[in-house]
Amino acid sequence: MFYYRIFDDKEELNFFKSSLKYAEIAGLLKEYEKNHSEYVNKEFIKFLKEKDRDAEIIEVTNIYY
Image 1 (tube, rainbow, N blue to C red):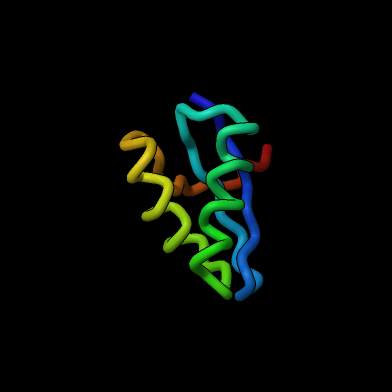
Image 2 (image 1 turned 45 degrees about the horizontal axis):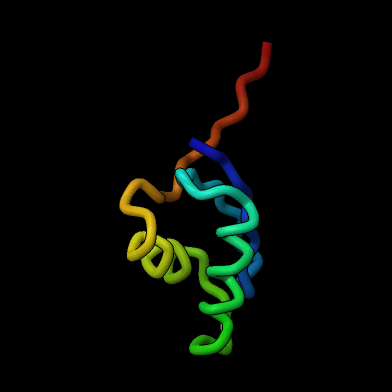
């Protein structure tokens, strides 16, 4: 599993996990760009799940000690 962070056009930061390597994610992002004029993380993950059923947004929380 690989872990990534992404920012969308609404300035929202999300982290997601996927079984796809970075090069595959970059290729799918280019495909996604062809049909979308705005980047929204939840929509991209929905698109990504069509190619990788394990893809999902994950919540990351800071721990201070």
